[in-house]
Length: 379
Image (cartoon, rainbow, N blue to C red; front, top):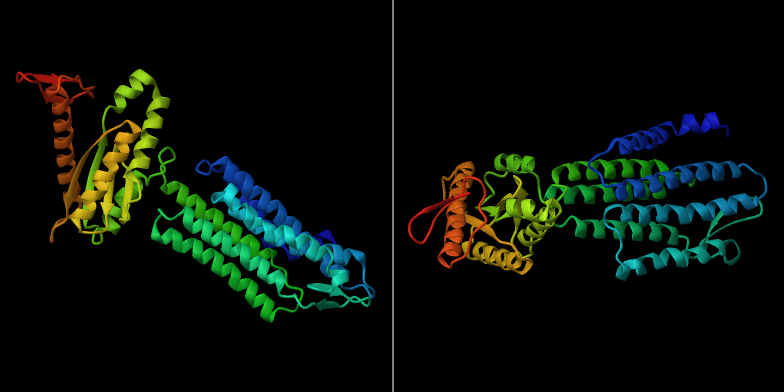
């Protein structure tokens, strides 16, 4: 097969690889680590396509060529390795999870010796493919790492939108469905590289959309997501909380913006502390946050607010909260405005407590509080 034949036959795959490479080079939302792992997966995908074409070419030989054995082993080991690399893109394995790579390492001697042990696959001297007693192992290996990819990604995106978690499931299941169809109804020369290419493109598109929904500093949902959900989730939100961080401007002015960034990240971690309640947390301004609760049980909501205050205190920061339950007939945007008013009342109360105790609050421009003698303090 000539290079021209290969390009014509695999034009769509090559176009997907090159197109994705161009998109990655222009990406500003995607972290460089993700770009590097994706690029590595694309390189391996290209090698996989080339080796599959070369292995198919060796099938035309009248007698067995050593190259067919070498290429087959390399292909069977490379395809699950691509899945491992894809997993590393957004859900890198922790040190305690590296045992998950053991099946792949065990597969190296199994595949490389299979021509002699005839356990998995082997070839006769007249160049015919034969399956051994463990011939299905190559499919098990692929399915295993597809499952690892699915589970680790679902854990990684457990706080993301439900639609995004469904997207991860769709990407994995559609790829597995393609492999199963080719395995059952293919002609024995099945080339999975096109499936891999489509999966990587879909996965990167998913990551790009997800990154656009996430505030890069705090990891919370963005202001744009808040206004979208204000409309699209208007019926399912049953309680809201408006949150404003105290003294961020003072931290920025006196300790530097790097310290302010650390503070915002600590606040974000506190607001997303797991209390077992379903909620969405948004960063809608510099130090302003909104929370949508999908439960009307105010005891659980109040418990969640208490947990957030506790986590904030442990981190050395504080926030003002305004939390309200939605009543029948309440418009969500009006409820948010009322929660904002309650939050500012809480902020004034917290500052008043500092003044009453003899402390000096750090005001933002325009803030007002009443001193012990009734005088106003204005920042």
